[in-house]
Image: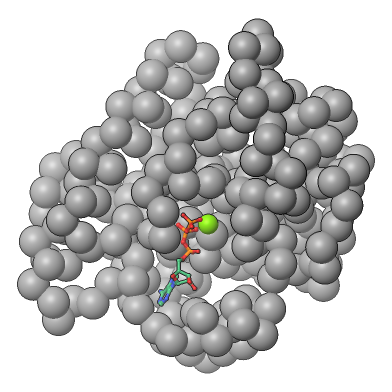
Length: 252
Ligand SMILES: Nc1ncnc2c1ncn2[C@@H]1O[C@H](COP(=O)(O)OP(=O)(O)OP(=O)(O)O)[C@@H](O)[C@H]1O
Ligand SMILES: [Mg+2]
């Protein structure tokens, strides 16, 4: 059985996609077969690894026609990394599946894959709609990227409530691995001011991801930081995050 990790926060622009890309690429670079699932109709994850695909070759078909992930996954330039890409039409899935009794379970079912990847990393959209709920129902673990800003705490509370509901209603073994401070600048007062109250709510990763122009540069080149800046400071931070994630999973 794969270890399934959802990267989620209903707030937009907090670093979900960047975290998902680097966690997946990094795990694959360590030699583990990994599947990156793009659940955002914006398709930002997909665009780093693939040219646009047709709807029929995307995660859309998993939701619409219940096709298994193994038939929809695409190879990437990283031999251990596969991706289940998104398309813009994914936005209509929310309405298509609304009121459908098994609507929350499509992803969990689609990901059941004997001899499949060791890790599945899912990039969630910035809302608590059906796609994010599908990810939480399918996941064993959840990582919550957050920005050091005044409004992050409310967002985290809502997210933790949602996770609690999913645990309660659907399954008990969904664990929050931690909140990840992204675009962090330890010279600003707000960063420290948000860190402490967040730690009261949820475990916060020791690793913090700094703000760095290299992230946008790498995305622009359609590369990951492991490709664009192998020796960079921010690349090392993602390496450290992966260590921490693996340690957290081991501890269970
Ligand atoms: N550490 C960083 N330093 C500087 N810029 C960053 C960093 N991480 C992410 N960014 C940039 O911030 C923006 C938002 O990041 P990202 O797309 O990962 O967030 P998101 O939570 O997935 O957003 P959305 O909610 O829209 O899906 C992007 O333009 C990204 O390139
Ligand atoms: Mg995103």
